[in-house]
Structure formats: C-alpha cells, structure tokens
Length: 368
Image 1 (cartoon, helix red, strand yellow):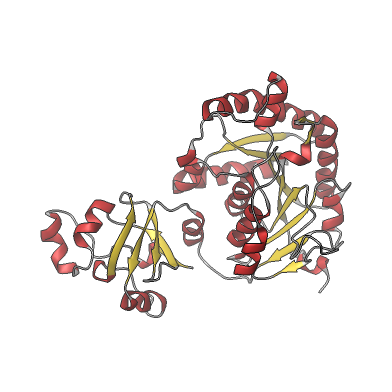
Image 2 (cartoon, rainbow, N blue to C red):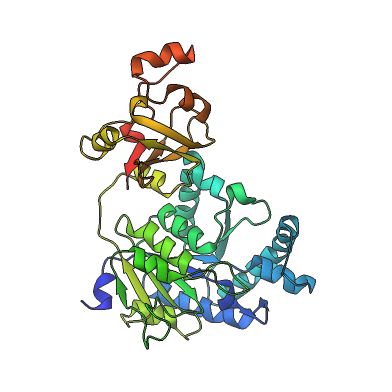
C-alpha cells in the first residue's frame, strides 16, 4: 500500500512543531518558523485545513530575558512563558502574514478538555477559524497551568487537539525522523499498526534540553489517536519541505495507523480524559462489562484508589490491576469505600440520601 493511499480521505491535519525544530542555540529562530510557515502554506494550497500545535514559549521567554531555562521553579516557568508566548506568536503572525494567511492563538489547559462544555466551546471556536481560512496556532497555557491541569508535553496536547477538531492526521515534527527498533538500524520503521509492549519499551525516555517530549510521549500520543482509527506521523522537522513531501506520498518518518472503529463523540471524549482515580472489580463484574455490556454496580467493586469526586472520570481495572475501561463516576471516593461490595438496595440506607443505581452508567463508560 502506497503512503498516499492512507491520505486519500484526509482533509484536516494537525502539525505539531517541537521546540527543537524552531530554536537555534536555545532561542526562537525566525528563519526556522518562516520555513515551516511556507511548508504549511503549501498544504493549504493542496486543499488541506491545518492547525498548528507549537512549543517554544518558555524557550522564547528565556531568549528575551537572556536567562537560562534550566532548573526553573514553576512560577519562573510561568513567567518565562508569559514573556515568550507573545514573542512566539508574533513570529508566527509575521511569517504567515507574508504568505497571505492570518493566524488565531488558542491557549489550552487540560481543564478545558476535562469540561465537556468547554471542550465543545473550544471545538466551535476552532471550526469558526477554519471557516474563516485562519490557521489556528495552539499551545498549552503554561502561564496558568500547574501539574493538576497540565498536559505535560505538547505531543500529548497535539493528540487532544487532534480529537478536539476531529482531524484526520497528526504530524509530529521533531529532531528525530521516526521510530527505530534499534538505534543502529539504518532506517526507521515506516508503518506501525499496533502499539505493543515491545514498542513502548523501545520508545525510551525524554527528549532534548529544549523540549519535554521524547519518543515515549510520541508513542503515547499515537496510542491515543490510533484507538479510534486515527493516523499519526513522526518525522524530522529539520528536513526542508517535509510536510509537502509527506502529503505528496513520500515515505517519510513513521506512520502510526489505527483500525477505524465507530464510536460516539461523548465516549471518545471520555477516553481522552485524564483519570482521577480507579476502582478494582471482581471477575463477575469484568464479564458483565466486557461481555454483557452492563453498567458498573457497587457489588462488583473490591478496591478504590485515589481521591475523586462525583462526575470525575476514573479507570476501571480487573483484579490484576489491568485497565479495562474508564468512565464518569456517580459517587465520590469517600462514598465508594462505604458502598463497595454492597448490593444496590443497600446503598440508600448506607449513604442516608440520594443515590444512583450504578456506580458508572454504561452510557458514561468506554471499554478499552
């Protein structure tokens, strides 16, 4: 199968540009951003809608302030990002303006994805930008994020954006040209159709000093979008015209392609959310969920991990702690310790008030 065959129905693309691809000696490079803008403009001419996820706010801030970004406290990182984001966006604006395109800045936190209402508001805003032929340029809102509401890296953010805008293809550009089974291999693996434990192990650890994402975060991003038939490419952003080459069918980088699975948007949204805790269930409950397509009841729960509130999304694991599903929980963790293992008829008297028949309703759950 030719590479171009994978992209026959591709209309909307997310391009993630890593810090290492737009910096020179630790500071933002106008020349590098200009080259990416030209390449993205070529995709626009080919008829694609393109959203850009960019890193570089903290690096940009470090360059402006003439300070090192190493060993920064969280407030210092937030301050660097506040300074750098304005400079970064101005560089993108100038580069795209020369090519006849306007850009729109979108800053997101994980909280925006967690709230279904805010998620849909962000989707509507992005759709409006596409209709106006504006190129969305997205980054994490590093000035306000703390660990609890942080994506952690822009590979993960780009996977969330892929889902947010219902894209067809995600292209991750970095300083690596694909996934290698061994570092000594002469060429990367060109196509991957399933993420295995071996692939996760070989993905290794973190990236460069100017970014937070290594191959491990890229494989995690691939797994997120492959779950529902999405496609992702990891390619070398240093290669001139890399985006045009990819979309023209050249076999560049590693293509991750999942099997298309039909699923409603609400369940897809649930699958992409961070979880606040987990419940461990017995074999009977596992069978009921996987084979009987049932809701999760308190009687099948044997253990609770983490602290969560009603309405949070939690993992459901089997007795061996393997995650089999996730969903929106109807009880907070303190209540779960009281009702675990109990029959539904007993719950009302145990909690002395309003109760739900299910801990997690089938419609609020996705099997993984």
